[in-house]
Amino acid sequence: MRVILTGGGTGGHIYPALAIAAELRQRDQDVELLYVGTAKGLESRIVPDSDIAFKSIDISGIDRSSMLKASKSMIKFPASFFQARTIIKEFQPDIIVGTGGYVSFPIVLAGTFFDVKTIIHEQNAFPGLANRNLAKRVDRVLLTFAEAASYLPAHNLKVTGLPVRKKIMTVDKEKARINLGLNKNLFTMVAFGGSLGAMTINRAMLDYLDLSRNEELQIVWITGESAYEEIQAELERRFDRSKMRVRLTMFPYMYNIEEALAVADLAVCRAGAGTVCELSILGLPAILVPYPYAADNHQEKNARALVDKNAALMVIDEFFDGYTLYQKIQELKNNPQLLNQMGKNIHKEAKPDALNAIVDEIISLASS
Image (cartoon, rainbow, N blue to C red):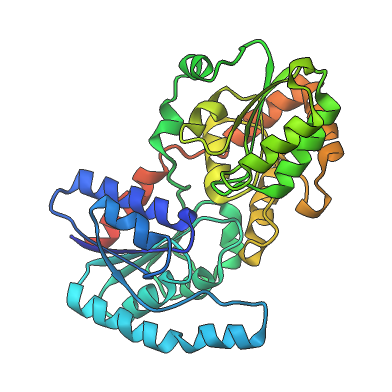
């Protein structure tokens, strides 16, 4: 079986594709894989390390900040489409799998003009522009959120969920507590803003600490590498850590974040699809602060899909501050029954077998 994988721009599009590639290799040692991305995108640095053949096309996302910039992005599309056709002709795939991002559009679209099976996976509750346009042309559309179906003009839809890291499902909670030096009897919160951090969350956390410094709880706070030194300096300026009752552990970045998530009672974070799915697997209630500049505001749609099921709380980025955070946490901390029910509700959304379900669909479609 010969498979083209394509998706890029953010890790949310790349890592699911790599998980799919790894599972395909595990099932079929003779599978031939090609990843198509852009030369400047994150995928050009990540994919080659996975020992997958990589080719690039020249395309960029639509910059909606001005008509001129948007037009420059659109001008590249015809050339990228023909580059995609050339790659498909040369590689002769049995199936093309798109995991989202602007780079996937010309590859998957070009594939629909060949005798090649095509499949797309939509991570978010509100589909991106590329997948909204591809849905009616491809052979199969796979979804993370059932809510996305209403936006897609397709009948061949299936909710599979989103692949998550295996470490999330296998973490040992007791070992995680020991590794992090946490007390199992204390209410534990983890706050993070994604791989790059989020200054809205960081600023709110500083003010939250001011309000909660005398409370019995422990916090794991991941600031993001770019903000870590600034936050450390601000903490030293504003607080005498030795006089605080709240226990605070800070990291610029956390490679073993699954340990913090596994032992936490509550998360404060963004609402990217990968994050939401990991929270669901662990049954971890969350206060979600959607990134306001995500394409099509899809993070807010992801968050609302959970809020509507009483599986999370949400605060819009613009209105998120330390006092609001303090009120929300107190509401949950003082109502264990509500917190527990939120955990049960978000766990109902988990699809731990998502990767197998996706790869089953790929193999079935490719051989049909």
